[in-house]
Image (cartoon, rainbow, N blue to C red; front, side):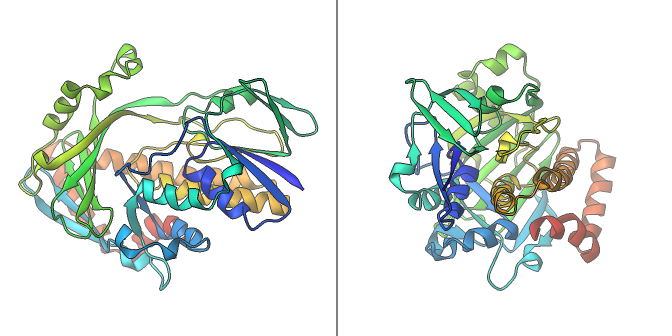
Length: 376
């Protein structure tokens, strides 16, 4: 019986635990630094067909329909005049059993958590040392030790575990943008809408069938090192109000209906970490974090975890090569989307909008730009 340590109880770690449940030759334990999970968090995520297919294999399709939404289009809108530029049909990437889906992040976490036996997750975990011998010896701060054959590192962009095992630590970089997230009340339709403005964009989409909507804005903002270290800044009402006030107003959205606002600086990876150790796998944001302008963070966390298990079962050494190729493509697209969504020069905006109108209906382009990612 092989033992697997999963560091981090986010989407990637919990999904990996779920797919291990059917593998009788492995046992696992999740180490989570928090003392519990918040299943009341109302913020949304988007899941493309690549991850929905994997989730449906473990019973996700049995969730009540009221807890998810199935947008059929992405609308591109000019924020300053509320005019729709074009839309992309998402249904062309669906299949009869798997559809592009939006929902609360907490809904997905709760679904994944319910399938993990209570004795196989340890909350309040503080790993202080990892030693490599025949396997891995993990030391916790209460000076207890546990030994494992495999190590799955999925504890986020600022992974502490990476610093314990890697000599070459590549820290994420602030990309001069701040994210503003919140819940939006009202009726904004069943699709995803992207509002493009000067040096910012914001996205609205339903997270269930109860007229609850996720709102997320990405706003260009220079911050000093001291400001980035000041966590209270991002929670202050003054800072949150200044971010909301900086958004290009549109007649289609009532910003007064925003609630549960939170903000955070956007960090991205600059390169992949150097890892040549066998039986150690990085997943999710611990492996690589790209700009949030392609809505693939959650889907890639799931897909990566699935590839890790296949690599373990097959004894393959090609896991990182495949992941790097896929994630590099998504990273390039994310950076390009971010650039094009934030254009401010009127001529550049005019050219972008006309190109968007053409490309949004070009089947060949859409299959290469989206289809190869969504259906990987």
